[in-house]
Length: 86
Image (cartoon, rainbow, N blue to C red; front, top):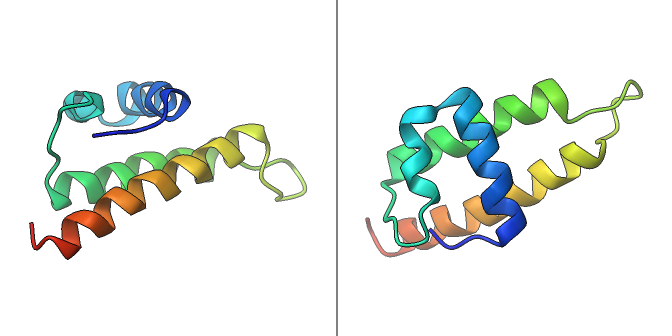
């Protein structure tokens, strides 16, 4: 799965905490299934965003902005997979 370096590092951190069994997806040459990618986006990264990504005023903090960028990158991968019928 091709991600920017900062997104790859953040995703590794999130997966180590929330879904360690999916850490192999961070490998640049991994070929994630749509199901696994959905778990990563919706459960792991989405959960991390909800828990750590907002300041007291409910605005995204720096971590939240980074997690939102990661979700955007992962969704682009998901959309490509869906378009290819995989």
